[in-house]
Each structure stands twice: as C-alpha cells, then as structure tokens.
Image (cartoon, rainbow, N blue to C red; front, side, top):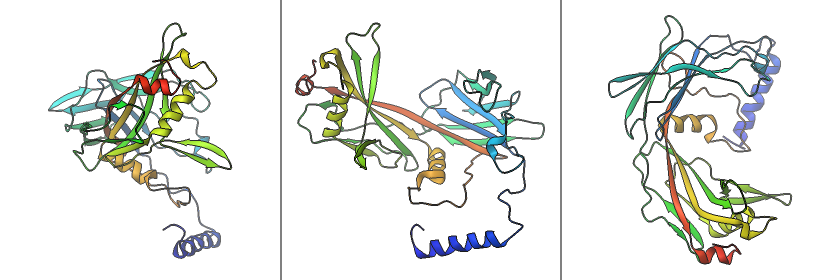
Length: 314
C-alpha cells in the first residue's frame, strides 16, 4: 500500500473527512489499563519485569505527563516446570530526571534461568481484582556448521549460516572486532562493530549495520571487515593495537518478540506513512509484552599474515 494511486486517494479522503468533521478528536475515550513487560534472557540467571498503567493528560501531548505510571508493591511470579518464582520489588536511582523525578521501579529475580524450548508463564496482580498473565517459550540457540572460523586474508566474503529449529524467530547479528591497546594501563578489552555495508548520501559515507531478519545466515564482505580493522587505529600508531579475535554475536528472539517487532516497525521503510500506531500485546488482562531471547557468540580467529598485511603487529 505504498506509493500507489489507491493509497493516496484513501489518504486524501481521510484528510478531507477530518477537516469537515467538527467533532473529530485525536484522543479516544480513556480507559485505564495495566501494562506488564518482561523479556526473559536465556543466558542469564537475572530476570526483570516492569509494571505500569496507562494514563491520560490534559490536551493532546502525552509527554506533558510528569507522574510516573510505574507500579510498586505488586505480586509478580514466573512459573517454570511447576515451580513458582516470585520477583522481588525494587528500584534504582533514575539517571534522567527531566520527566520523572523518583526512582525507577521494577521487579527481579536472580535465580531463574530457563532452558531452550521451555514454556514459561508470568502472572502479576498490580491491584485488587486485576490479574495479568502470559506464556512464552524460550527459543533454541544455534550452531554454525561450516561457517568460517578463521580470517586468512584471501577471502572475498565470510558467509555465516546457522541451524534453524523454529521458523517463528528473528535474528539480530552483530560482528565486533575485539582488541586491546598495548600502551593502556590497566589493560582494557575494546570492541569495534563491523558494518554490513556503507551508504553515501550527498558525498557523506555512513555505515549500515545488520537489522532484524528471519534469515538464518548473513554474509560480510571482506573489504568491509578490512576497512573496520583499519578504522580501529585511525590516527594512531598501528603497533599500539593488539587484535584478539572477531566475534559474531547473535540475538535470537522468540515468536512474540518477533511479532512485536514486525507489527510495530518491521515492515516500515522511509517511504511508509502510518495513520495509526498498532498496540501489540500478548498479556491477558492488560497490555505489554512477555517474550524471551537467546544470546550466542561465534568466535573468528585472525591469521598473523592477515594482520601483517593490514600493517598491524600480531
């Protein structure tokens, strides 16, 4: 529905209808609802949930609200394999107090790590008579098969492929150069992200990084890796840098996170016009998102000759 005649006719008709209807208001009747958000980390024992409620404002600017809608003192539970894990009520100091002054309220547990393909339920009672619940399944992690584990220097591209156990997931890959500075005390390990491509607008070159995709693989052109390697020491002496390896980091999102992303912005581009903002939720009794993700790191070694060809000392 982009850039076609029917779309513009419908859009023009909507604008005309708005201008001719004196009773039109951009605000719908307010209905208070409770919001529960929790994203499980399959690689961590710490899990966090947030509770809040919707609010109304005078006028049409939602940013005019300065009353924190988050909720403390509620009961929040995770259920896994028949065992209930209660999340503790807590808060931390808010770094940015330009909108809300008080601390950030949240619920957490440090003793819960679900396994891949496990079903997990969440429930919350934010107020008397209000019950929120949802269920998700932790996604499988991946294995890489014949993906390249070494950069020698004669490759045109590095093609990474991983196994697919579930078609309802999305992947977010990131390639990062891991290095240290030899003259730095104490020694700190740094990273530099490799773009998948570069775009040029009005003569200005801008790096482009991988986005979310259901594709079970990604290819990085060697010339882009070389360019990023050289940018690490840009303006400095190359011998000051010690390269350890390159990581391909991968986030694997479950079907609900994938659904949330694709519903809210997964299908948009710079030419799209939205007339409404969809409310994606998988929370029974309220709004919000309950999902899970896995984290994976694939390590790629660097051949000494490759580093020397770039002017670095192995």
